[in-house]
Image 1 (cartoon, one colour):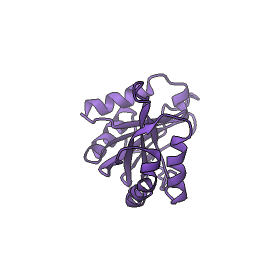
Image 2 (image 1 turned 90 degrees about the horizontal axis):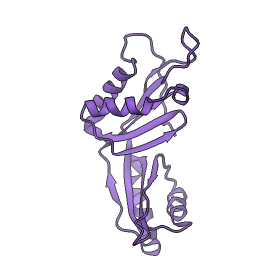
Image 3 (image 1 turned 120 degrees about the horizontal axis):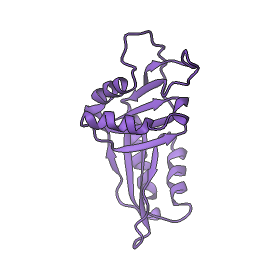
Image 4 (image 1 turned 90 degrees about the vertical axis):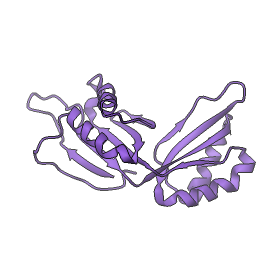
Length: 185
C-alpha cells in the first residue's frame, strides 16, 4: 500500500480535516465465491480454510441472499501472490460447502481515504464517489470503517482515481508530505 499524502491534527481553526490521507495498493486481487448457502457458519468455514492456509484477507463483502435459493455471494480481497494458494484451498472445500467455482480478478487496485474527520464532516463518501464518477471510474467493491473508505477499481483506472481523489480533497498541492509504507493489513 502506498500512502500519498498524510497530515495529522487539527487545522489552524482547531477543526479536524475531512481526510488526512489517500492510499492505494496495486498488489491485491479479488475472489468471489458464489452460491454459498446462507446459513450460520458457512462463511466461517470458507475463511477458516483460507486462514489455515496462511492467506490474509482484507476487504470482505457479502451480498444479500436470494430468498428463493437462500444462497449468497461472498467477495474478498487478498494479496495477489496468494491467489493460486487460495483457489486450491477453496477447491478442497467446494464440494462440501457447495459453492460455484470461485471467480478471480487480479486486475484491480484498492484506493482508500482515511481520516478521523469523516466522523464529523457529512458528505465525505459522496465527494469521494463523485470525484471517481467525474473521471469515469467504476467502483467494483466498497468497504468502510468509521475513519476509512476503501474502494476497488480497475487497475487501469487506479492512477486517475488517485489523482481525482487528491484534487477533490485538496491534497494535490506541492506541500510537504509524510509518506509511510506498509501492507495496510
